[in-house]
Length: 185
Image (cartoon, rainbow, N blue to C red; front, top):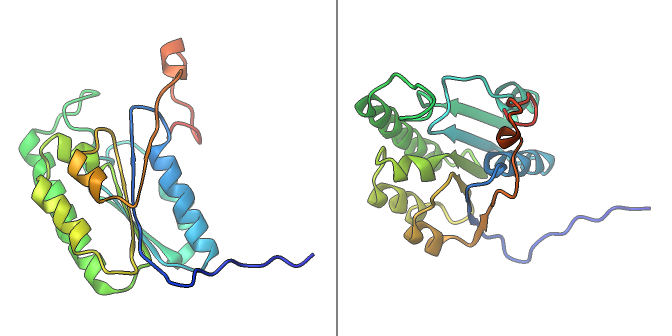
């Protein structure tokens, strides 16, 4: 049996927002990275909040070789889980991440850019709404942009081509089960 590939008549770079209180937003974005690699597309992942605790996608993405670049720019989740860094340091890291986003978007080297946890960064005032909207508004026409994190701002959602909300029905954490490698991180 021959497998055919669907090709759109007109290519269009999409803005995808993954939000909600459930588990799976970053995981969904990583699935898109994997799918893009299968189409020989180049991807850049910039993580705004993660950086102080190991997460499996760091080494998993390395297995995709030079098709994917990953930048974990954060100092962990601001204000929770005993994170010791002041808000000002988190904000400076997020501002550096925004400069990296501009550089990677304007390079023309990528087909897909994932801004992991940028919605949280906006909610925590590590980045400003006008900065996030400028990313969306200045996105090259054929670039796909995926933005993850809880509490996506309404104006960000209104600019999305696709927006999905991941809602928690149940979570192992509420059953006193510790986070599990490969599933939770």
